[in-house]
Image (tube, rainbow, N blue to C red; front, side):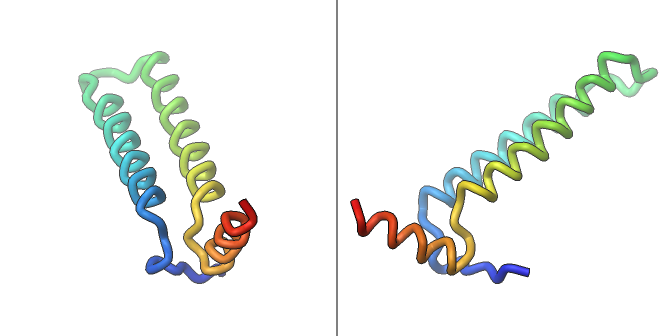
Length: 82
């Protein structure tokens, strides 16, 4: 398992992480704020959409942010070549 290096995480990464968390919480609140009556087909579509959004957003977020020492080193190398 990769070891996280939280000391080297950039401010931009923390901001993107915070925005992602807020967006996922907001979407979950909207989804679950619907009446708790009988679940209809449209509600199942919303649940499926939320799960798809959450999984792809978290995957994309993890792949595009540098939380490991190795990734941070690679970012530094790329930025030094510019």
